Amino acid sequence: MTEKPEYAHNTTGVIPHLVVNGAREAIDFYIRAFGATKVMEMPAEDGKRLLHGQILINGGPLMLCDDFPEYRGGAATEYPKNTPITLHMAVPDVDASFAQAIAAGATEAMKPADMFWGDRYGQVRDPYGHLWSLSTPSKPGAVVTNGC
Image (tube, rainbow, N blue to C red):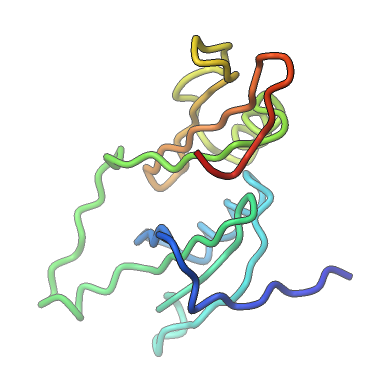
């Protein structure tokens, strides 16, 4: 049995917080696509949407929620087909991670390839429009780290 991760509400650094249509479905997708671990869900009063959710992906927290236009004057967020941000992960095997994400329902944005800076690098787009880049060092002796 896997121990439930601790809810990290006082974490340093920058934590991405995504607004999606279908936060519960997004959590399930991130579990399948990236091996995420669900930390917590806080349902809304309507019992359908999530006010707040937190998962861990690749050792780091990601928060997400459904859209709540009623808290912003009634105007629903117009979700772009392709958001203007990229979420990046250093992974042990970019090809395996890429294939897992595609199998879970992500779409190919850039096939993994060896890049001039020394990483094998690829990109996928999740069903919610977010771009994810994945990399593994390809130079001999290079090490995967979670920092720059």
